[in-house]
Amino acid sequence: MSRIAYVNGRYVPHRSARVHVEDRGYQFADGVYEVTAVVDGKLVDNGPHMERLDRSLRELGIAWPMTPAALSRVQEEVIRRNRVRQGIVYLQITRGVARRDHAFPVRTAPALVVTARHAGPPKAAQVEKGVKVILQPDIRWGRCDIKSVSLLPNVLAKQAAREAEAFEAWLVDTSGFITEGSSTNAWIVDKKGNLVTRHLENAILSGVTRRILVELAVAEGHPIIERPFTPAEAKAAPEAFLTSTTSFVMPVVQIDATRIGSGVPGPVTRRLRALYEAHVQRG
Ligand code: PDD
Image 1: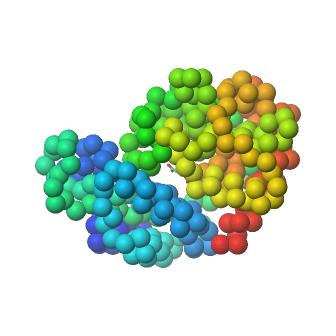
Image 2: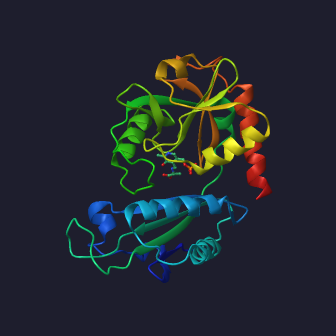
């Protein structure tokens, strides 16, 4: 079956899906995106993704190309046409096509692309064993709260992780604190059993998985402290994990050369993963 993409009002074969060379996303990375998980053919927590998209668009002064409800219908149609049961739907909105000039163009319509693809959940073996992360300097800009398609520092950090045979790179700011992963949020469990993850601010993306997990953990009585933590604290923590749309809750058992806890996923992380999986299955 051939894949279908949605490009500016049309459903087209994925292999011939095109945007213009003067799309500002292509020339200036002047655009935003969202990735929503698909489980059993249904969008997972798309409401919070739409809220975050609204915020990203507002912060950049880009108009909605259609209403959020209409956009959700396009996401569902792309999922349907590609027969995705388990996977992701990607959407990207740029400021549109205009003659190249850094300042915003006047009267240019935003451009919208939506794609979907199959992707299995994280491999059971990986979840059982846990993963390794490496530390990299956070060289990103000052508005990482906006889900911008400008991802070059994230790309470089993830590539460094790949070359080190690690799952992810955790980024360290100039004050020596971990911000987040290249495409995930970073968490530790401290010695008292508190869940620690960086507070929401311009230095990190407000992850939808992070948001949902905070709600689920609070409801079950896990204490949460939202504050920065250092690599030294993370390496000495009994447990660590990361969260994202595609990884759910993934145990971290090694940071650089240091083993975390006993080197296997800990009980708190396992419980949180189970809580999150149950939430996803409930739909
Ligand atoms: N990444 N931090 C960054 C920098 C991210 O890019 C992401 C998401 C997250 C986690 O957010 P969420 O829980 O909403 O997925 C944190 C997506 C999945 C991506 O770029 O593919």
